[in-house]
Image 1 (cartoon, rainbow, N blue to C red):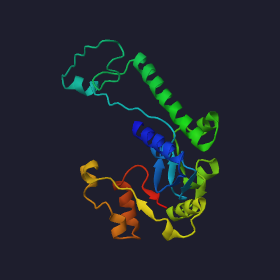
Image 2 (cartoon, helix red, strand yellow):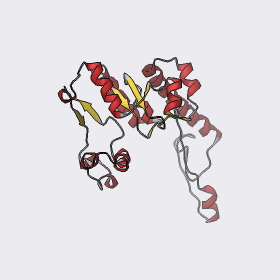
Image 3 (cartoon, rainbow, N blue to C red):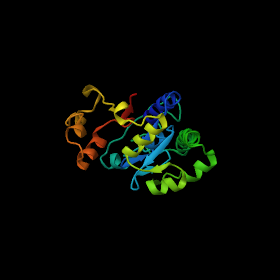
Image 4 (spheres, rainbow, N blue to C red):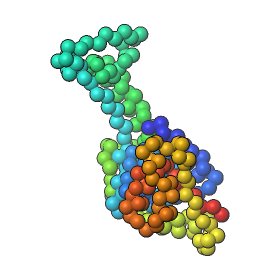
Length: 221
């Protein structure tokens, strides 16, 4: 959640000085939705999966398997809640209560971000935030997005908002990270993969998987 929070806060600061519009692709759920909510307008495709407002914490626990293998683990802790959860021992009731409190607090932070960005009450957001994803059509009806449309529609809306009728007077510049900041599997494709072969839906999908989980373009006057 921290990565999404950092992007969300950065977009909030940017949106305080310049208008921001979001165009959602195939998937913009959970933290993807979190970073979208500061935008002045959110566009989604009818089939976009978004929402999924919630927090999940998972920890594998192998004590049963270790017992069958004859392996035991001695753990020395400074307090009863240190080392909770642990992959080598079942979660204690006290540990579960403690971790549920952490999840609840993080969930409250997420709800506050959505409430502020979408101009909703926290109670209304909570009524939508049972963790489920919504399609773009469903999200529009619930007020989680503003309009069904493509990236071109979002760009046109922003140009109109800025009073720029000439598209050449305000070009769109993709934001690309240096190769050194990308995981090794993302370096297998060129950073300008869509520019090289425009119009390819397969490559557009690949770019969504290979690219940055955050803002991807900016209008430059």
